[in-house]
Length: 150
Image (cartoon, rainbow, N blue to C red; front, side, top):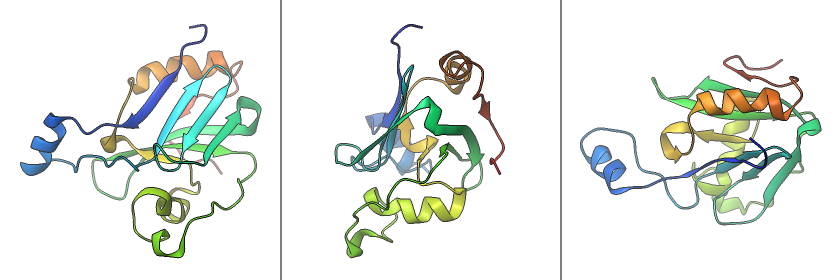
């Protein structure tokens, strides 16, 4: 395991675009959120390829959960921290767009955290791999759960 990291980032392959046109989930956009898990903690991109990137060491994380998303049969990967980060500097015209940096407001209302990626819009390792590594990286304190933490 060592210095391995698990990076869920936007993925818009040709196959996801074809699937979207035939009724599947929409392909991701370059400014969709992304998250990287590693032995030292979590790095969350509010909009992949843009700043700010929120970096948390494992002591600042209280839970990682996979929850049902707002669309049936879709899931969200959520990171819950001990203290909320400062409000991002999101221009007013982007706050409720449902894309990129404006997603934080929407995610907070849906999941109780702004640190979320929709699994149908990202590519990365399997959730099984993440579930295996979280306890090792956090000395058993954090496991991947399917329940929203209190």
